Image (cartoon, rainbow, N blue to C red; front, side, top):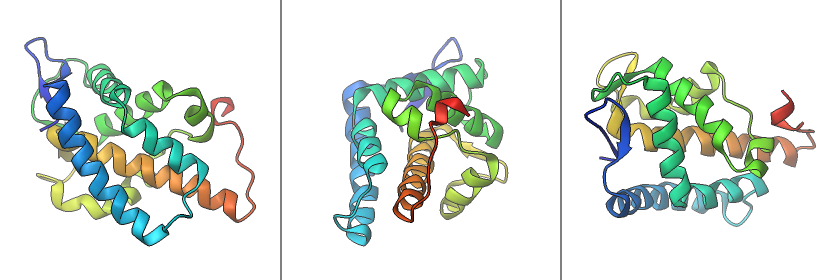
Length: 163
């Protein structure tokens, strides 16, 4: 359980130390699986993103983005739209090198990236707040991998802050 609703309806980090541990455990599990399939051929964007996801600033940026997009609604379930808005807000808070490389994902990309996570849905069109960190990681890692793959095949990626 990564985030909880505060008395003011905003989302806050429950316990920075335990959150980092649970987040780190999930991330390492996910990333190690990806590392096994991709071996040492990780791209520049994916490596930069992995470093950011392991930092305390990711947890703080995610909590801030979720708090802003949920607009004090509170509760344990969020809609697809709030998840999409949270991702868009988080993209704006990324370190500059990642902000330049990663455009805000659109609805179709998010749905495709999260298709493997459907079992986490309590019902259609919504997600558990406790799963938001993991869902955001899946989308961002998919986005970074797509940018790296596009560059590997000779594609030119423009500065995403100019889009």
